[in-house]
Each structure stands twice: as structure tokens, then as C-alpha cells.
Figure 1 (cartoon, helix red, strand yellow):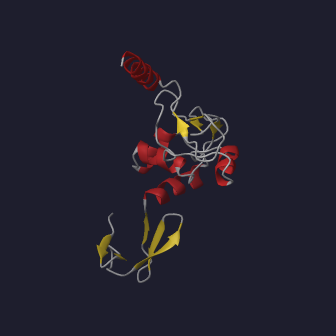
Figure 2 (cartoon, one colour; figure 1 turned 90 degrees about the vertical axis):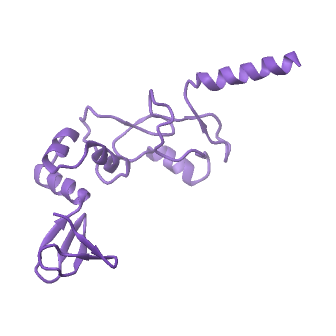
Figure 3 (cartoon, rainbow, N blue to C red; figure 1 turned 120 degrees about the vertical axis):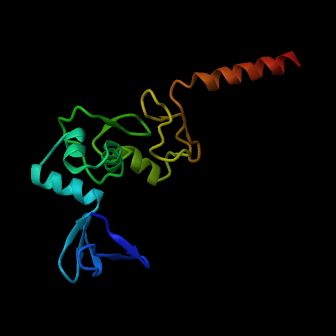
Length: 165
């Protein structure tokens, strides 16, 4: 069931009344009481009823795409269980985390300016591990790829060209 958008207000598909946001992905019509769940609301309700589920189970039961469920994990809106076979890694140090993109330690270091991330959090910079590596703890120093072979080769070729001149 879709919500109709009219002048930036949510309109109930049952009676045409205004829908208002109640929280946790739930909208309710102020006239007829009809409830509508957005994607997050569907995942949340599934987990509230079942207590837990794998990403494919959640996707199949709610009709929400697997990538969308994974994005809720990265946004920190849902959390992996401690015994989950799926593992998320901190974008900064690579440690295993249960939700979000940064571990508590790296998040704190970034907040206080001890380390800096130039690349946007959550970008899959190293496709093999999905992590960043801190090369310096100086503020503004940024992050680099782990095992960045192409960068190293490009620098070596540049040095060879410079030496030949």
C-alpha cells in the first residue's frame, strides 16, 4: 500500500486523511486510524515479533531488499546478534562491530580529533576487507586503502620518470 504525497503531506490511502508519524517507521491516519509502516517500520516490527532473524529471512518476510536491510545495519538502526555469522567491520581499524560503520574506539578518536577520515564513512574503499587503515594519528591525515598496490606502482613509475629526466 502506497502513501499519496500531496503538498508534502502524507495522505491516507484508505480515507484521504492526514497521516502523522508516530515513530519507529509507523505512520497513522488521524481520521480513520489506518497504520502504514515504511521499510524500517516493517523490519522493526518483524524483529519485535520474532526477536531475531537472518538478513535473508528479514528480506523475505518483509519484502524489503537485502541491500536496504544491510543499510539499516550500517546506519545503526538495527544490530547484529553476538552469534551472527554476518560480520561488519569498522571502516577505520577493521575490528568486528555489530552495527554502524565505526567501532566505539575509532568513533571517539574521530570525535576528539585524534584521527581524521577524509573519505566518507561507509565507502567500500578496500573491496577485499571493506576497511580503512589509519596511517597517521595526526589530525587531518586521512585514511588510505589497505594493500593499495596500484597507488604504490603509480608512485614507483613516477619516480622512474623523474629519475630519467
